[in-house]
Image (cartoon, rainbow, N blue to C red; front, top):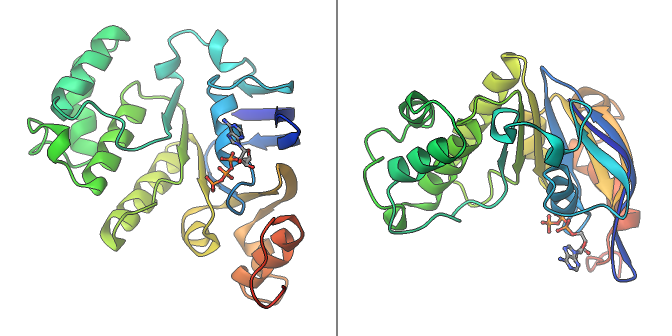
Length: 241
Ligand SMILES: Nc1ncnc2c1ncn2[C@@H]1O[C@H](COP(=O)(O)OP(=O)(O)OP(=O)(O)O)[C@@H](O)[C@H]1O
């Protein structure tokens, strides 16, 4: 489980994450939704110990990420697809990561199979398409067989086949009992992938709900999302100008 307790982060005078308290439960896909700049990436970076909160805490199974023993076996994350050495093959990348984190080397071929990269695993990642790099990012996240998975905008830039693949994978991982926390600014995509939704705007919690509850209001999911977040966006479309 991921637990945020009054999590707060400021950049100068700007509050990027503002007293966020949320519990992300195992066994379901939880969508983390909010407009651009609402604080999703900053929250995820704090969960992974890459940014320090100004106050509050982000806990994984009760402890901060940095205190986890063998963290890759506890939490898998996909933050930035494409951040791989372009001259290295996928297999070499995963093998090095497994060795440096004391993971069984048999995991490498296993995760390559899960993400469908077995045949391409010997190729330099510099030759990979965005979709293939995304798959490799997912392979990295799964390498330690963690019970908690966190993905920041995993469908960005993917074609429909890639989007469906990520969706099915995430739902399968949750069905295995894992905690799956996935961010997006696209409500329509999240409606197809997530069971629960955590909606934020300007770093604040706006709603913790289910897709069904959000849709029950009568208007479309998109309208419900805009209604929730409209007060928090810094920009306005022509209609509202
Ligand atoms: N390193 C940083 N320095 C200064 N400001 C930052 C930094 N990182 C994020 N911010 C600011 O914090 C706020 C939240 O940004 P964040 O990237 O977490 O939002 P997001 O919801 O992930 O947005 P997007 O969907 O566009 O990725 C924004 O106003 C952003 O400009």
